[in-house]
Image (cartoon, rainbow, N blue to C red; front, side, top):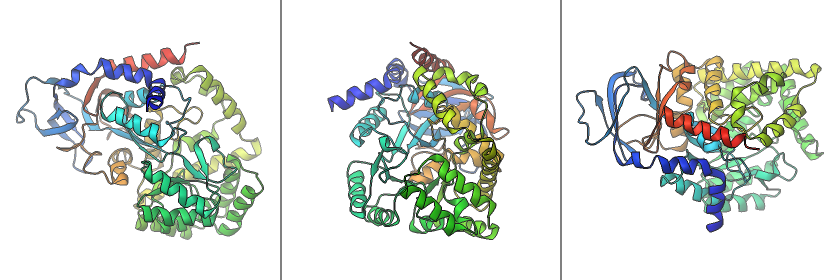
Length: 479
């Protein structure tokens, strides 16, 4: 345990300091007055509201002037401002040894009060220690639901954050172990063979643990949905499963994995082919199946968009780069250069991104559940900041601003079966809140105009958030 705590402090040092300096303010209730509350229950915005927070919970909501305000209390005049639930990034990779210590501060400064970690290198014991420190208020950070390590096969893309399940027996063993040690769900990945995937599914159901992730090459998106996969990430498998040439294309993927020709470009190349042989009725039927089965989609449009970017000079001019440590900036440059598409490929890849936007809009209209996620830290994606970009891209795909907000609030709670705890602003819910200076229902970009954040009942005004960002910047640029 001593070793785990040492690792925790090494990863989260600035966050620990912020938690300590703000601990005194937490002794009093927080009262927002004259706020317009967008509670995400489906009700219209409610103006002139008072919201009372005591400890980690919302204890009262009502019209300003009609709610008894406790004394003493920290009063926040929210006139002209909009209160929404804390935001969730439902696809991140934060729990990795050696990762710099800026993740948690950047999340909180951007109103991201919860994350779904989709695979890291820390042990579940270490992750559980971090979660206990966050829950106890000793570390200022988001709530974390985690898969632990990714379930893949030997030869996968990310061995540093995966375990290799090459036989059904190994698959079952990992499921039992992950469940025993506190994983909230399992993440399945590309190279799992059909028999191993089916063994994982069977054992997961026996153990009562959900499974989510990529659609493995050997499995169709329709079959994964029917088998109960809870979410599909990055729209993996959808283009292939909507193609007239589905079986041929899937076999091409499987053969590539068997010959060791694995790279991000293999799936990309096959998906470009699949788009050219799209069967519209088959695609529509697939979306109806997702809706019927309750198969959530986490499209991570912001990382899919990165595949069409070619001007690195523009990316290097991004002011947010100052929050990324110098070694990681160089790592990003190296990765980015290796991913730039050839001129003869770029047209197909751009069309793939355009079609991804289209199918996300079509799935939304088909009543498929959508989750907001970013897949940080891929190159030039930024913890916290990029979730706001994802919300904008979801609106571009066809979601309303309200529906886009749902993907990062109430939909996260529904996914985890935690509707009684978070996701909406209601009496008794956890006090994870974001106070905005403009109405996000007028423009989803207004989620970036943050006046204050309440995380786990702790109030952080804009000045505190700016100090957090300044601390991250100072550490990131230290040579």
